[in-house]
Length: 65
Image: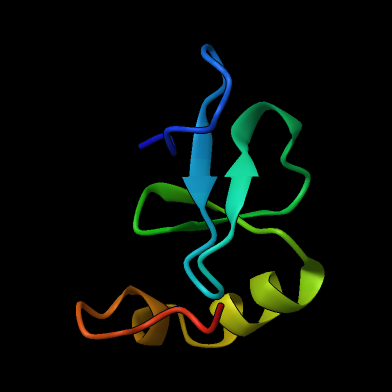
């Protein structure tokens, strides 16, 4: 899902840890979980996710940003 301010043609993903938008084609930090690729803004977010992905994917989780 793209934010209204995202230029057309750029696919963005939401970092599941902090909620920041990440441009998919430029993403260097990713992780796979249950067959889905997740994108991260920073190494710390990816490390937190890898330690406990279910915490960040829970329906009631609120991103920190």
